[in-house]
Length: 80
Image (cartoon, one colour):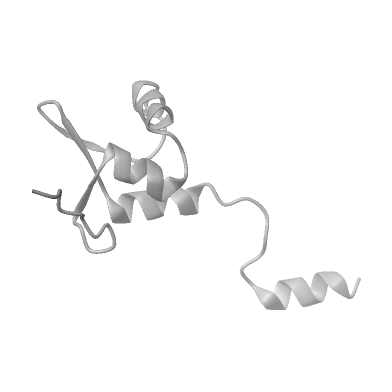
């Protein structure tokens, strides 16, 4: 019987493997971050670890570097 694929776009929780793929990092990196109390928030029930998609998106936003979300500020700086 073929294994069922999970649509990660609608899944309420993602496995560590799915979360790693979503973030573009290895499963080992997520494990290391968890051991160091870094990285995205995760949930542990017994030996099962899962991640909420919204927590992964929040984590990605917290990693943003540079850029400017206010186009008006960009224009005023470029005129100086």
